[in-house]
Length: 246
Image (cartoon, rainbow, N blue to C red; front, side):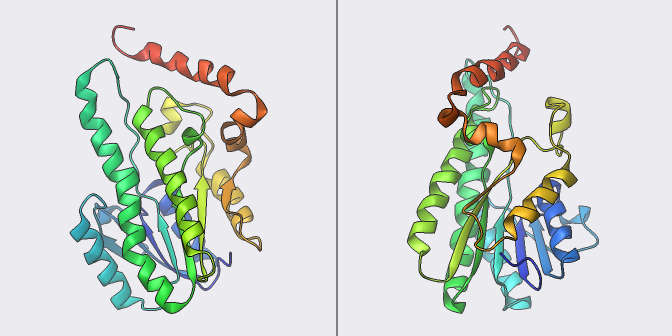
């Protein structure tokens, strides 16, 4: 994938990995608009307000972006939340619904909003964001893992349906990255700059890989294949001791 001279929209690009990626694309020579619920935190890039849990907000953001940038050819769906849940407490349902609304349905809404534009122009790129946790759960975040497994399955289906149209579909599969408090939850979280260095090196190859799996995510992505799934899941389940009453 060419990362120079692109015109991109990154939903969920006002913080974390999304904002870091946006700044890297700008440095490479691309034009980038970032979207999020709170655009006041970004003052160095064009922004548009978008709440991916609200279909009308997504469509309004699409219209605003395309009115200013009719040559848009790259869309990244980065919006996400990571919420802890105690599955012994039925009140976790609120966290579960929020997670699905943002991570899975939000991804689908953004893709649905922009896919017709890319098809009409005869090409472009859609980038979704899964997670290593989609392939090896972290039991403290059960619905997060389920939502990202859904993103992975949906991305695979979208790629198959868009084959031959000129619109390519790529999935980022991050490990824990040191943003949004991940460094507190996981001291081994990969520094953001290190993650972005590897992502850009891998995504810029031709042909673009269907999945961009950095080295730190490989043990999660391929645990079942490598026969390490049960052992690693048991290790990750130790974090459940931090829940009240455990």
